Figure: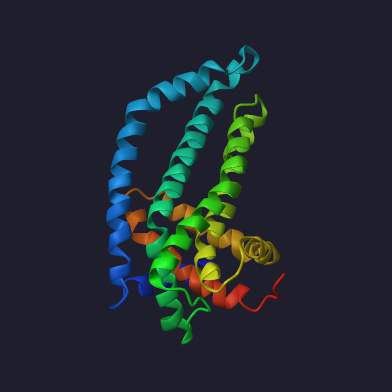
Length: 240
């Protein structure tokens, strides 16, 4: 079976092959604008956020400030990039859906099961992104609260890493599954049934989201790679 890293590499090549680029450069342009605005906001507020977090460290943990400070910084970086990914995907979802459909035809030789028109597909893609947000945001908020709990917040970066891998898998693998009429609930069941491929692919995608600017050009490859993962690991699973 196809492994996660190979799927990502092959997907990136597919995304930039002739005939695919029209589905790629529009979301890249959108992401560049969002990236610039978010980077400006984060740089102007980062110091205040960090001071506020450090002020909440109880006095009995002050001797661990040398460890808590970098953990807080890492948690904040994870939150910022995770939020950036959510926002850009909400905007670029229709284009990623079209890209995933085209990649499936080229890579597998068969079109997805989706028979909706372009306009309906675009509208439904935004609706699907809202469903994802309804799943992600409450869990993200809970993890954010846990990150402030003394002592527990020491493992917060690890929890964020695992959470990010799972959510990135949901975000990208959902494109080919939505194109093949797999419901959101069934999609999560399939991802759970193939937990290692799911988390490993999500981890690789999380890693590339941390590469400033380069991530904007690699994320379409993650969409195409998700199609390859769908075909290799999830398509043959029974429906719920």
